[in-house]
Length: 217
Image 1 (cartoon, rainbow, N blue to C red):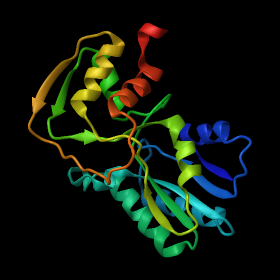
Image 2: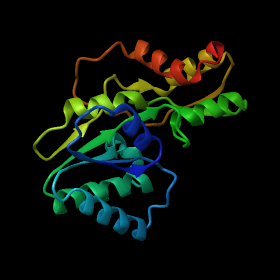
Image 3: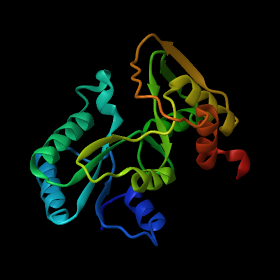
Image 4: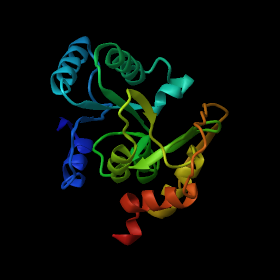
């Protein structure tokens, strides 16, 4: 069962065809909504009703590790939802997502940087900040390869953390347009346990070029 809304749900519906899915996958991931009490209660009701007899897969965020975002409404909402799931559901996996790259109709970090370059806007670079990124198409395989029988929070990442400066440089090269930057001695970098990474520079360029390479279009 796949429920929710948005691009992540559509990707699951498309790329999971032919798989035997004995999971309740709540594929909803967006920062656009207003995280009100009404929305929280409606979401919790939906999660409970759709996972009474099968395992729930819920998507949270790696941003919970970023202390500079401790008071961000999205982060607070995800933390609250994680706590609710752990207290109220009997069978679940919580996957903490990195920044997704894809055909996304939302203003995440990657699309923000892209738009700033296109519009000749100055980008403030936090020298100390890094981010984990993932191609949205890789999310589906990651979930099916890593979900477990036990109740667990699973960090979703297949690359080393990447500096904001590297992301901006790659996007600028792909768009073939110079970028205006302002360096700030700010930001926070968190590092998750080491895994068998692909070459993060190759993965970054491959992922960004898939969606932003204007020279290939």
